[in-house]
Length: 371
Image (cartoon, one colour):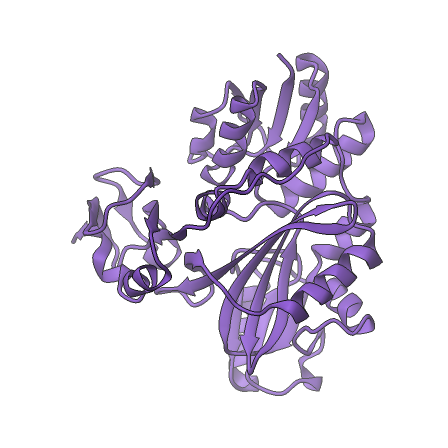
């Protein structure tokens, strides 16, 4: 049985772990966080940090690893690529390409130079119009992100954002629909594409709900194809967050890894497609093709507690087809706007049925909290 090392072990990596095991691989995960529940799903794990490259190299040699897979995180992706290139254990973009794609400022400059639609941005806010969104350049997941409406607010919030990264990108804030666009690249072409609508709940910078979506995204697709060819992206996943305003589709953030919070299961349940398998085979440098069956309408919902307190369990008035608990009864919630207690998938027969639930989902599905 061939061995695969995933630089990750959080709940976000569970789709990778489970799919590898279905493909008959021995899966080893790593990560030093106590809350990494993905380790419970793997065949073996090491409690070490992603950035401890010397220890990872020792594991590669000791375990005789056949392939290295990136977990759901930018640090994991870069280190996976670095090690895969060094030991010839996978198929990744060049390191300079990964650095460009995952640095918000460098990627924005690339897009502007190639007439790809992105919000106006700079490392100097003086050239921009308010409202402005402050973004740490190398992080994702909403950490350190703030929208400000004048210079006084900006200078105050800048200190908060710099706790996450000294390098800051300023963008003119565009308010509109948030979309997620996930594709699989093969031979520098889009082999498969999936569009979702993202929604926030208590925290405007943290996506809590995503659902199957349909729209005309031909202009976005043209921009993405241009990115693929200009950067000569290798086979595999490419995930984008997009803002739609006045029928214009602005690319906000991109990554060459899977999206987190079980987003791959949303894709696979919606289209009954082998998405995670394609991602994995691309990382391994193996041949793959798309196997797509029928269209379903699906909501992936991350439950966010309305208040701090003691978690008492989940209440759902809707039947779910998948549930992952991130909290257990008795856990103390101290930062509810950055906490997810559960992740669930709901499947519907029609688009309208899904949307009716989507508009009221935080009242139908919620965490029970005791003061």
